[in-house]
Length: 111
Image (cartoon, rainbow, N blue to C red; front, side, top):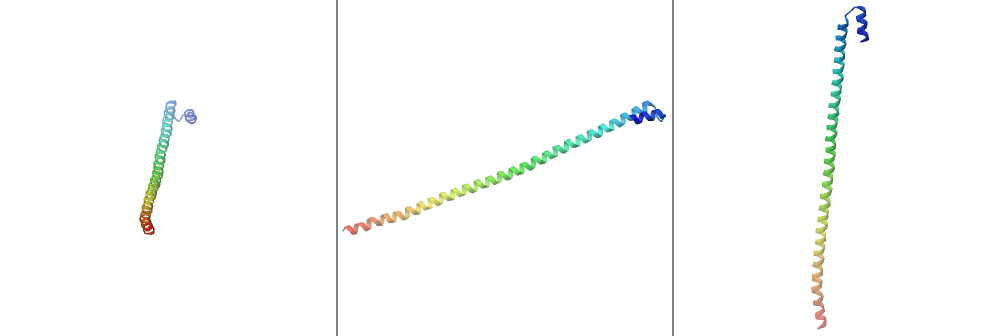
């Protein structure tokens, strides 16, 4: 406004023209600031969305690892149970013939 008032003093234009130029400059400045503010807000929203998407991907990867570990643990537990059952079956199979042979050996010895 100072420079415009200098123009009025020199007679380049009148007070109304100076005020009109000042108002036009002020509106242009405010609209430029508003555009920058809107652009910054949009950039923040986009950055927030990108961060959220990245966090979702990380969480999915972690969930996938946990599911894999649980599946491996379950498979290992089932394998251990199957192995234990197989060992019990094998132990029973070796004990049963030994139990059947023992009375047979004792009977001829007594006779």
